[in-house]
Amino acid sequence: MILYLGACGIFRVDAQDELRLCRIAEYNQGYWLSPRGEWLETSLASLIYHESTADRTIWYEPFAIPGLLQTPAYAHAKIVRHAADSSRSVDEALRIRMERKAILHRRRPAEFVFFVHEQALRTQVGGAAVMHEQLLHLVLMAALGHVILRIIPAAAGAQSGFGGPFQLFEYRKHRPLLYLDGFLTGMFIEDGDIVGDHYRHLLPELKAIALHEGESRAFAAMLADEYDRGSPPDDHVEEEQLQRRR
Image (spheres, helix red, strand yellow):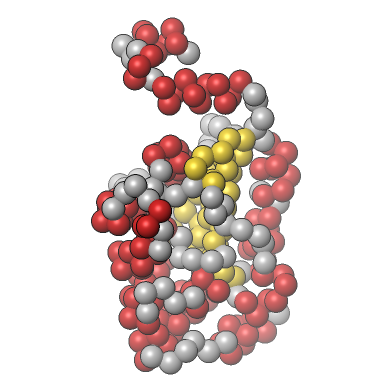
């Protein structure tokens, strides 16, 4: 590695991150941990790299709107909660998160599949007006040809729970990579047994329980209307949709 960096004109003093990654790779554990959050350089840089290079990204989010689909107001309200423990300003973190969204508008974008739990849509972040705008944005983004939104209804009960949030990065020429988003750390996993035998096998279950694309857009639009009218979103609509599908 050092010889390669030297040939590229990159010397030891400027290559500490690469050398640290090599030391981690020597253990060949099939995973590596990065400090969590958009406040920390190494974790964010790794996440952005894989988001921008994957041929398909599958994102499961049970608690919040996925970062790539967030509006500025929603993202600001989320970031403010962590600002006190950060070294970055809220404005800087918000700018970074918004710039990440550019990958959805590339000339030849990759495919993005978002499985979002209903709970994430019903959890108010920043108030009803922010949620109204956020859900309308969700509907518009889901209309893009390379963006697939599938909402997992709470009416499915215990079947609707699939653990914590994760991102699965798939490549045509490389093995898939998994990112688990934890509270304190983010874990990247490349171990084939974990990624292939466990998380990739979750996909048929997610597809089976989630609302179809058209139903998901209609459901998000219905919740946006509820937030706009200032009334709490009603649970009956998704129960009726689930019953029709059965």
